[in-house]
Image: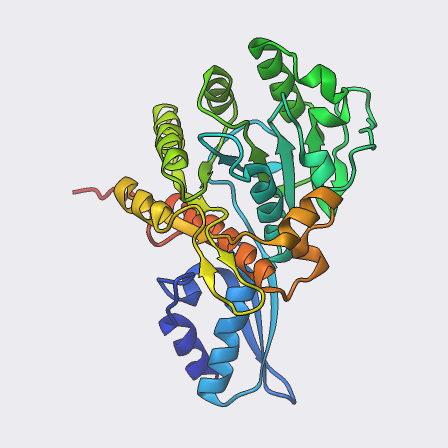
Amino acid sequence: MEDKIRSYIQQYRSDCFPYGLEQVFADYTITSNDQGYLLTVSLAFPCFTALQTAIETMAETLDVNMDLKAQVQVEAVREHNIAGVKNIIAVASGKGGVGKSTTAVNIALALQEEGARVGILDADIYGPSIPTMLGIADEKPGSEDGKRMLPLNGQGLSAMSIGFLVPDSQASIWRGPMASTAFTQLLNETAWDDLDYLIVDMPPGTGDIQLTLAQKVPVAAACMVTTPQDIALIDVRKGISMFDKVQVPVLGVIENMSYHLCPNCGHESHIFGEGGAQHLASEQDIDLLGQIPLNLDIRQGADSGNSPILSNIDSDISQIYRRIATNIVSDLYYQLDWRSPATATLSITEE
């Protein structure tokens, strides 16, 4: 039976595991017990939900009892000098009002639920909203050595924002160079605690400050948030172009407010248009990472600092965010991680 299990692991395919399960296992062992078999794995990226589905399918197919014990073993895909952080992922938008900050927070929480150590950095110096969304707007960071600030804990995430340090009225009147300097200080002078991923909530737009931040921060990759509206999609193209200029890979686009699902009859109403993000993704040769509906729980969670990712982990909206989060980090792994079977390898032979 152990040989059958190993064969299944090698042959299993899904959207999350296009090269088979074995290719995302940094290490794994199979042991037998009185109840069946235990699969112990170290994952190259957080994907507990997708892995659990795969193991349940395997158990049913092979008619065997399977238990799973998994941990995440993420590696940095880009060299940098930011202590305590492996990978920095920027969440950006071409314009304001598309739900970028809410999406960034919920992606970070979803990655945490999938097994990763995650932090979030609020780069929106002019209008920081992360403190409110995490329910810690009145807290202030401390310091153990007088040199580096300790990140605050918001719903399990390590968080830092200018909103913790200065009143909102002051943050909104800073000039561009001041804002850029303040942000780089927040990034470099925070004592991040061995994070697998640091999600950076970028300010909306594609102006000078956004370009400066993209150049100064060692971002591993970025993802764009948009609505289906044509005007929003036009600005997303500008955002993708900006990241291209600073040689930051754009993994894909997230379509927020994609549709409204009627709570009574289940009918989908595409209030802001339909198919825009899918067309954009095909045009730009990037992935459509996911579509998020208009949902009351998302709005209430953002206002109250109590995300639906944690308040109802089995809800449809929670599962949507978890799939999107897994899509982001799986793309990061397959495209940029040296351990991925999809990345190029260099071999030198002597004649």
